[in-house]
Image 1 (cartoon, rainbow, N blue to C red):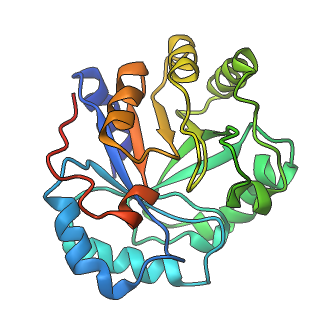
Image 2: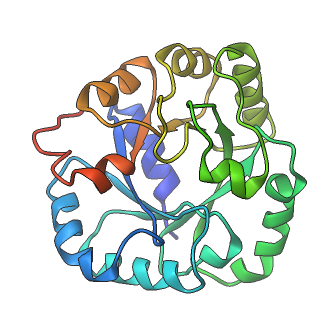
Length: 242
């Protein structure tokens, strides 16, 4: 039995901050895996997330299989659709877009995935996913046809995250979106974390070591980095998590 979630809880309980590298199969060439994953292995990254809003069939499976060849880090699916499910990964974030009201992304896609998940040795982690406005339209917003939550409406964000926990979610993920102009604010992170009894993941728009540390200091248990690495693979050089 895989223990990705249990290991996350253990790490957080011991005071460790976690860092996930997000790789989008639609933007990443399989030929780049050996060199890139070698750099990830040498960094402070603790997890590798794989997924995107719109990905060709089998692209995720092929990429995950290649990644697993070069790393012992947990590889976790961050899927935009059921076509991105593959047994080659260690775990799956079973994302429910609780910030929106499109039934397909609240429960519809999940129902469609059950037959594909049947029999797979894949740890499924229920995750409440909240899209927060960041200054521009994101791929998530276009694909899901949902509007992000307003940054200024902090209490509604907090209440939505807490509702996710009460519904049985094991993780809450605050997302500004790929290439976000503005990352999730420290006030939002702190306000949400104060009300939660489950781990908090924060991603989107974090492009500097200062923004990374600010997210941790504000209460994020795990930070997800994607675009920053696409733009500069040396991002992790000399980065320390504290």
